Length: 626
Image 1 (cartoon, one colour):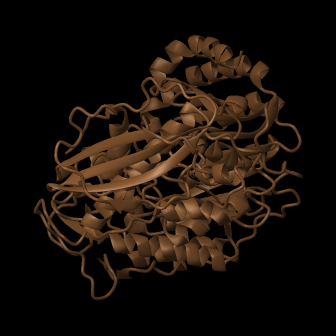
Image 2 (tube, rainbow, N blue to C red):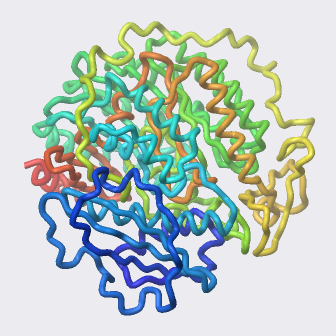
């Protein structure tokens, strides 16, 4: 439990508390004290190291004259403050002070949040004797913070070190920024178009989208496409410099060919030379040559084959109605076409072992798609795995990496759809309002001159070797010497993420009442292996984002072969261009570059409500961009 008189800071501080699941059971108090400094610190405070000062007496947070440091401080020009953050834990006060300078109220508020969170993180990190890979950062887009430092002429590495980000992740951010070179661009009039098709063959157990199997929603398809067409016509006058189009979902290829063609045909007038055009084809069980032919006919340049795992046991456990063999068939089917191909994988899926995940990464690399996206599992409100309580609450006194409240207020997808969806919410802190300077404009179309996708010969699909982790019918849920452990107590001290046992795995009972436990260090091993293997195979990271409370406090990373980075992914992840989004459960964003802010307009999540309100959405969208 966290108490503070600074109510405006509590949501930010709770983001840090939730990084350490059992920290929510601690009794914590927070106090901020500030005083003016008449000589501004030369470096905005970002490079100052926090240093403990003598602890202060009782009464933390009581009657402080600085209970809201933003009231009555209409600072204009450069201001400076000496800030003292005090955390009271188990009767002991831990105090940190630093000096910060700022040019605007927005910048001041951002810095106050940053250092309050850092102070709390340091106390909790020391209490639990645990360092997290992203340190005190809780925002969705670490790269935006890095770009903000670069725009000010500073190396972001110093700030990341101060915020306790690991060296490995700091270098990952540097590589991502390098991977965006030639694509990242902040320019008025730039816009990307997102088209939502919220229909799926079945609902995956980790998915929190408001979707239902196509068998239950097919009757809505004609009316939905009518509404989509009206909304697109209303949006066309708002499109200036179109950089990319992304048709996502959902699983677009679940539509019957006539409906898919109708969707592609309505978009055809917008597709000019140099515009990236992605269709998130989706799961291999809905692939057909006819649908691929339609994509080629209407100028699609990029498709997604969403594997998530190459383990049949895992695919069945998460509710996907396709097999590993069908993944190979989909890749083989796409081979004659000139599409750039993305393949999705998820680390930390239901009961999956490190060896199984390693095998999935290796198999994806062997198929040689131009892009591979590696997600970390995050369960949000609405996901079957969460709603059925297959993942228990954080363990008392432990350092488990899961959280029962895994970002339910975030608009991020749980990584079911290629990682390029446009449902991302803005990072709430850490320089999110900084005005970033333009990067070099993108030259030449990304992926120009691409040859046909050519994975190695697949041979007879019936003779595919079994995935790693299998020994007959027995799945080894953990590496040798580390058996899958079960514990029904509310408490443990070794830090694990609880996942349902496989029907064929170790343990007794049904998947709903028997749990094997994936240690958080195993998840870290999965992420580390993916980075090493993809780098060795010639892939480079070019975008990343995080989700609140995701397993192990890790991240999702898009990897690409040289020359095949997605314009849409870079624009959306960095919020560097307007995003016009049409369809249900879609968020339109207007990026106001000269003011350093973003305005948003969300559409209804469910299809019937969307159909009722589409005319109002068209009107509101025109007002947003007027």
